[in-house]
Image (cartoon, rainbow, N blue to C red; front, side, top):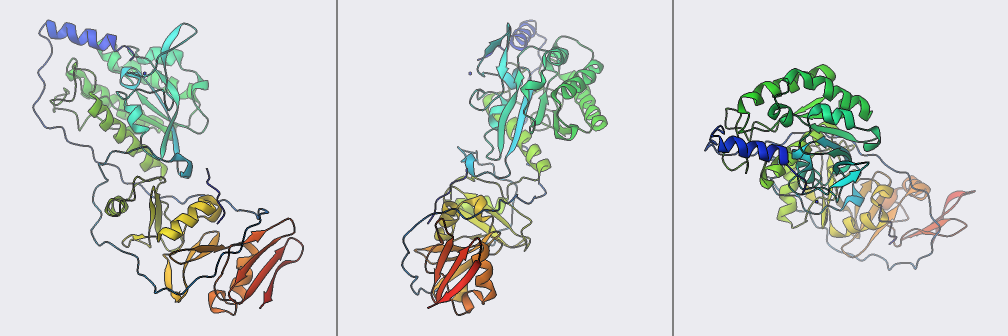
Length: 452
């Protein structure tokens, strides 16, 4: 079958030194013993995926052997109800298959820079926020682990206040199609800067970035054992700033806060900064917010069934709003689909392999579950841009004008029967063999049937 595979330790000096000084002076509050609960992931409204219309590509290939009779098999199903989003950590995603991938840029201080790779540009220190350059103590590293998010812009430097960032920010830091995540303010509190000075700085950052307000994510501050009494008022200001400007507000304080503005036990090593584990939790919370507002999402029932069948990690997000109200999602070792709000079914391995080989964008998403009762020789799976007939051993795609002609004569129920080979193209046109004949296509004459 044709193959078309589509596609670090910067100083936290200000915070650490300040924290150490206050600890030595006995001014640092004790850390609560409360348990650190995990955040609840956001639920998204699904969005339809784009499709790409293919055109015939000249190619020669041998004719494959005809399909053989096999009993129809019912795809496995599950009946367990969907639960909260999976807490399973993301692994290395195969980004080349993503069609709902969202780009994001990060701007901040030490929470964002953390142990990222340091650069010096025109005498200014800092870290560029880009994939492969961000350290694993930064929340941005963990948000980037989400398979449908890609960190591709922004800048961060520990110890800076909001006004410092607003002075330094440059539009060139941000790709035009990115989302902007801002996590700033701890240094304002440590330095005693009035809270009401921050909104103008934040608004200036957004204006300079050129990013639309509806693609801006303003992150509330995590707790602090140094300035716990200021966390609540500061986060209230951030909520007001977000509402007045049309920004998205992301809460990462609730699941880390002891209830008094200080950290829960084990969430920090110095009273200010996050541990690596909690940087991960903050990153995942921010990722969930971006996904929810972008229309991208994860489906718990799909995650559950993927684990049951050892499909590996998702390589794409669920694509919903299919004609039957269904969703489909690709994983490393398979694909799942469901119609409407029903239970997911596992697509046959041959169908998934052929779909990948043909090209996910070139064939589109399956718009029906495989129908293995239409013919003794094959299962039929309709896609957005073609129809696949498959057995356990082989699968052939019918598309374009050949498919239209095939449908006009009754599809598999007509005199042509099911396809016995893949489409073959050369400089003159394309042809495809069926049980009862061949459909020939040329740019000038269109498609014609040649019966056996």
